[in-house]
Amino acid sequence: MYSPTLDNTQRYRGDKTSASSPDHSLIPPCQVACPLHMDIREYVDLAAQGRIMEALQVIREGNPFPSICAYVCTHACESSCRRGQVDEPVAIRALKRFAVEFGGDRMVRAEAETTQVEKVAIVGSGPAGMACAYYLRKLGYPVTIFEAQSEIGGMLRVGIPQYRLPREVLDTEAQRLTQMGIEIRTSTRVVSLDLLFEMSYKA
Image (cartoon, rainbow, N blue to C red; front, side, top):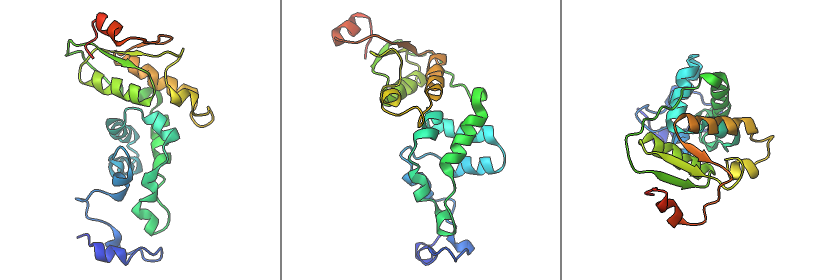
């Protein structure tokens, strides 16, 4: 059984006793530290077993854009990784990046059927707009993204240098949105919400 008191006595690198391992019914500190609260322990375990595509599926369930995250994530999870109490934290972001690069074109396609009739317009295609479109589409809504620039991505494209986030990674995630049935209209500036309502968008 996990003991907070006992755990606090084992924060030194030299102590590698089994008592430093938490009860698996508890939420791991790495998962708590993750802004998306992804099931890190699950996909790390799967990767360790060589079940990379299954690990990728777990990553995809908790993160609509794993390829982007694998490049720009600040990996707060690693600072909270309990393995760091023994020697070094698990290289969580590197494992995630390996999984998405290994998956490549085999990455599980996010299927989405239209089950709702209300059309939804998303103005702007930054990370918030892309994520909003993704989850609304998963709920079955017909979704259109309107982007004033010639390519989607918002600050992901114009605010992060290419050496930090390769443009082909961003383009691949954008392609997956269109595969879900999301309509993307670039070079289209929305100047009036009334115009969207006239185009039969409900939200």
